[in-house]
Length: 94
Image 1 (spheres, rainbow, N blue to C red):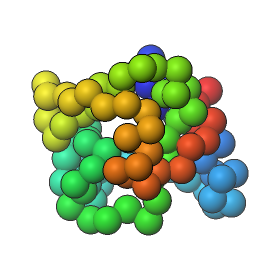
Image 2 (image 1 turned 135 degrees about the vertical axis):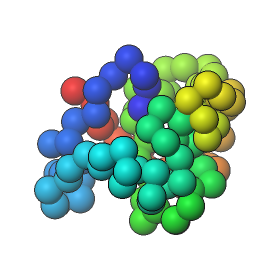
Image 3 (image 1 turned 120 degrees about the horizontal axis):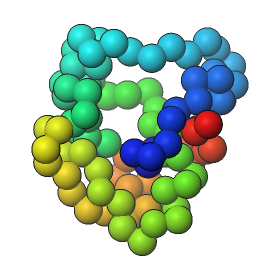
Image 4 (image 1 turned 180 degrees about the horizontal axis):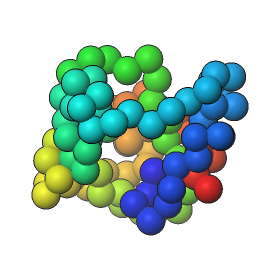
C-alpha cells in the first residue's frame, strides 16, 4: 500500500473471513526477515500464504518499494509488482 495510507484491518479481516491483527516489530522481523520500515514485497524469510496489494497503487506509473532496509528502495511498475509477488489486488486502506 502507499505510504500515505493506513491499512484497514477490518477490510483485510473481511477478505480472509478471519480476525486480522497487526504484527509487532519482533513478529515482523521473525516472519519476513526484515525490520518494520524496510519490509520488501519479495524475498521474505518465510513464504507468505498470500500477498495483498492495495488497488490505489495502480494510480502510480512507478512505485517505490522497500528493499530490505528502511533507507533503501527500488522502483517497479504496478503490473510488475503484481507479477513478481503473485499478489492479489484489493481495496485494503481506510
